Amino acid sequence: MSYSKLPELFPEEKAMPLAKYYYDYPMKDLPEDLKKQIFGPPMDVEDAVKPECFLDWLKPCGEYEKVENGYCMLPDGSGYICTYMKIPESVEMKKIFWYLNWLNIHSKSMVLGHGNLRYKIWNPADHWDHYFVNWTDKTDGIHTTESLDLGEGDRQYDTIRHSFNLREFGLTDERIEEIKASGCNVNETSDWESFDEPGAHLTLGQIRPCPEGGFERRSVEWIGWRPAKGGELIRETRTKCDEAYLRKVAYHTLLEWHHLLDFINDLYEEYHNQPDDAD
Image (tube, rainbow, N blue to C red; front, side):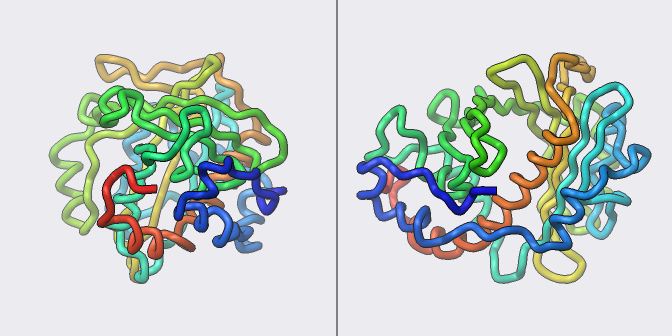
């Protein structure tokens, strides 16, 4: 992977104080044991949570799926990806949640068409642009432009992340209380993704206390599925998916989240009290 060969920033971006997080915090590769999981054989399909049971993946603190880092093709031609990582006690969750909102806002000196430097610093090899579709909040979705191969030449994809209510798909008060009782917050909404080509991804995620200290991030995607009105799941058969793609997405996801931990403390300290449009 050529993620160490950074695309050059535009002059307007280089002039921003934020540029140091692009150049001075180099991305590191994943630990070898984790890479072996991602680039090894696919997981047993029987260990994947079935799309029709997707809410079963949401678990109380201390409970896990048999496989937390892996991928596989499902019998119907759709795909499954799960990723997991620990977040050390030195990183407060408020900093990560602050960043996940802050990166949707273009700063005052960003030039339309040049992408979003706040997003580029998260994964310099792949990230380009990130913003609220309505430029205000996520009500109408979040737009992302990125590649997924860590600088190996794949095209950039435009994605819209749409929010949907999990209660419409069977998330009950009882299940919410069970998860909360373990010390884990429950987000009653999640997202699905549409693209600049036919296809859809259904996603879930949890950031929750880790029994060993600190926090942990779990995520899962069903490639080729999306929610519909009335609590129905739709199989989007036009979605492109194969094992190579699943490995690529898993690697991209884990690498960028590990990289975020390298700079989030410094970034938060410098920017969280500045105006939303600070460069």
